[in-house]
Image (cartoon, rainbow, N blue to C red; front, side, top):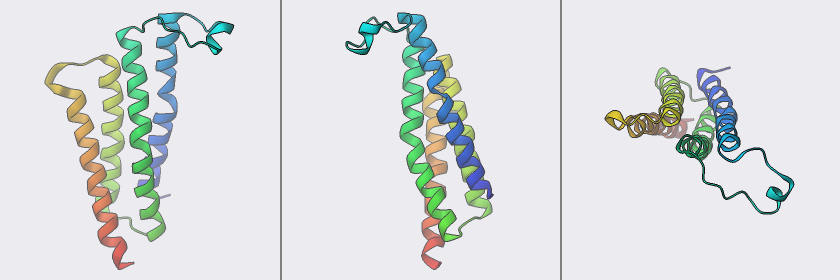
Length: 137
């Protein structure tokens, strides 16, 4: 397994478990679902923490597909370099930090925006390298 595929797998696992804090936050804010809640969704407000947990999960889902597409295209084209491996690692760890900062509600130094931007920049580096080397393949 290439490094890029390993970080894709780790990113999938991270994205796949980020629903857990979201659901826990919703249960804590609204209680367990009742039969009528399946027809009419609960409208009780969520705590700030539960709202952040939900948004962190949604943001991870939104960003996973583009990362996965580029890693998989790179794999199919046989593009795997130190730069693509490093970019995939940076993307994963920045997404992990993004989730932690989002859930914790860190407000200092625009931390959430900073780690999101680091992940996005790593994605762009990865995509550019796949495009550049994939054309030669």
